[in-house]
Amino acid sequence: MNKYLLFLPLLLLCSLTMYGQSVKFNDLVYFTSLSNREVYDNLKQGNMFRQDYMETVNGQELEYFKNIGAKPNTEKITVGAYTKLYDGTVLRTVNYNSTDVQNIINMISQAKRYGLDLKFRGADDANNIYLFDNNFYHVSIYLRRDQTAGLVEIKQKEYLGLE
Image (tube, rainbow, N blue to C red; front, side):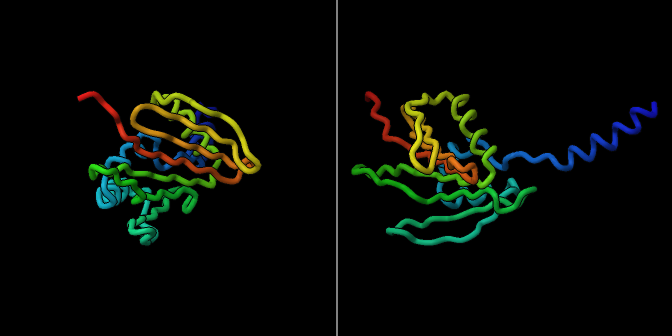
């Protein structure tokens, strides 16, 4: 019985120091189909991110969010970038940056589980590069070679279906 009484506080202490990423790959993919306001509302409900600032770049309203959880300011989400097609369709882009390398490694495994095909895996001078693709999304993941940060970029693709 004494062993259990010693083990319980140790377990509680360890659980206090545990940390998980604030957003999952599925959430980022979902954000590509939402407007800036809808993304803001979703992130506000989750209580893990807050709006950092907004800016207009080339006529696009970009919104920047940063996490406020266990490790504040280690994760950032950028929404608002888009490409407008000739027929008026808007293809959105969502960026996720993290200074916690484990979050980026988790995103790579989540992208594989999401069913995306790994089209390219390579490296340049600064980054390990992973490119995933399917009919609807193109995902670029850059993991710094010095293990300091990473970027996940999810772009909607034009789907050329038969009508």
